[in-house]
Length: 142
Image (cartoon, rainbow, N blue to C red; front, side, top):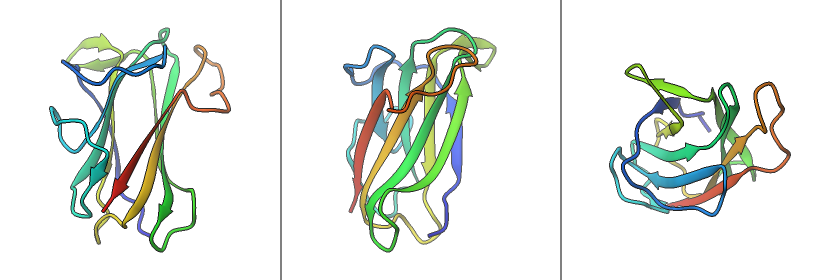
């Protein structure tokens, strides 16, 4: 499987889904900025995006890990890519903790199957990530 390009960018969230995590809120899985919440995507989807707001002190590391759980012609729980950012992030000179992690479509399209994105938040600057993610999002490619 060709590993798709991972893009990390930041945005302000005007709305999103509430989530039970105390550190990760306003969680949204979609295919476009300003898009609606989704849990299923087509094999031709150009990119899949996770929007979230993360609570943490300045310089706290956060990480998204994209995993192919049960996907055609891919080993189970294959780690596709990961990205890290330290809080707060800057967009157009403004500091905030609203983050967007995205993964672009492979050249031959998304293989069909079940995927997940794990969001990790360290307990503070210079601290390691916990063993378990703060939030896990599941999605399907059909």
